[in-house]
Structures are given as structure tokens and as C-alpha cells.
Image (cartoon, rainbow, N blue to C red):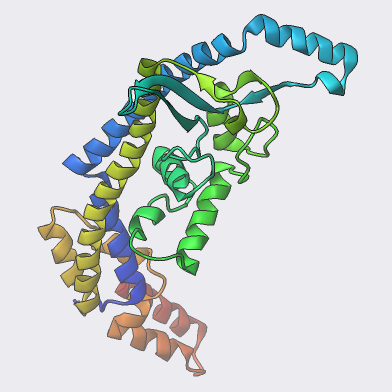
Length: 322
């Protein structure tokens, strides 16, 4: 049988098939990523429960209810209760070299895109967490949740921007950082919803640091560290896949025949059905098999044939490709 020559379409199909196996292999890096995500869920449960206790200690439920009653009665002048998912927590249990109390505070954002370094402003770190946390859901929507990890050492570029924008759209992210009146939808809204708490004072959270104990503060830090660890484990895992894929591309580009790519897959322990690749390829079988190409060209010639001859020619052609 005539060897099938490689073309771009066949290379891409073979590459994607092998890459998919790389991404689903039970490696140490993948397991560490999955465990880090489980730890995030655990820490979110602990930290959000604790945040509710700390916030309600500063803004008692009864006071919030009273102020809402006043708002109904007096309107806008008493509109001082709001819902928020990010808070400045602080404690004064540390001392400096002069044995003076020192305030320790930081910004903790429970939203999907919350910053991981204590800043109240959004950054790519929050986006990196979001795409890592919802990786499978984004893959199912034909997005590339690994784009930040793949482009980790590259500056912003059109390719990166395109895939990041697609991920943000799929997540339902509006870009708004504050309050309950943002325009987030879908996965982002669903993720954020449980973490909104009632606070008194409608100004930005920096102006209302909420007191907590040192132990409580450290628990909040542990939760935020878990989010950062998920980003780190995602990066490490994708780095290993990227290195393999870089070598895979080089090899496939050098191969002239599909059989060489099939042999590579077999050596990697990956079963690839050559017939399936060819069947789903738009031109590989017809164009790159010389006998089939010759038959197709002959069929294009405007020669006078009887109906019986045409039927026979078509039958012979179909038999040649089966």
C-alpha cells in the first residue's frame, strides 16, 4: 500500500490526540494540581465560615436589621448597609523592636478573581486562579485555560489576549471588583454568591478594617496561600506537558509519512487508529495517495462515456479507497 504523506492537518490531528493523552496521564504533577484544588475547596469552607463570624462580630446582625428598617423609613440618608465579598482584616497582637503594638492588616477577597497578594486591585494572579480552578469546565467550552501557564515567560501578545478573553467570557467575568452590583454572570456569579456578607459603611473596604485575632488572621492567610498554591501547581504541571509537546512538534514536523507519526505514538504507548485519522482527514487519502489522485484527475476529464462505463468507473474508484 502506498504510504500516506504527512500534511498539516494530519500533523495537527496526531499532535492533539497525543497531547490529550499527556494531559490525562496520572502523573505526579497532575495529582499535585488536583490535590491543590481540593485543598482550596477545604480552605474556602473554613475561611468563609470564619469570615462570617468576624464580620458579624463587628457588624452585628441586629444592627444591620435596624439600619435596614431605618432605610425603609427614611430612604437614602440611611442607606449604609451593603454586601461585600472582600474585607480588610487586621490585628494588633504583634509588637515592634520597642515593644509597641503594630497593626497587621491585609485585603482578603473571597471572589473568584480575588488578588492573591493582599492588594485590593485585580491582577492576572486572580485570573490565573480562576482558570486553574475551572480548568475542566473551560476545556469543555473549547477555551484554553492553560494559556497563562503556557505564556508564563512571554509578554502580552495577541495570541495570549485572544485566549484570555475567551476564558473570561466563558467564566462570565465582567471585570468589576467591588460590591454586589457587578455584572458577573455564569460561573463567576455562582462562585462569588455564597461569600457576600453584610457590612455597615458603603465606602471602599480599605476605610473599614475589621478587627480579628492573630490566629484568625493567620487562618485567612492560610486560605489565600492555598489559592496561590493551586496556581503554582497548575504552572508546574503545564510546564511538563509543554516540554513534551515542544519535542512532539519538532518530531512530527520532521516526519514525511503518517506511518512515522503512528510509530511514535505506539512507542509512547498510545494507540492511534491510522484509518480513523485518514477517514476524518479532508484531503489526506484523496490527494496524497498517488493512485487515488490519478483516479480523481481522470474522472475530471470531460470524456464521452456511456452510463454503464461511468457506473463501472465509479465502482472501481470506491473499491480502491476501501
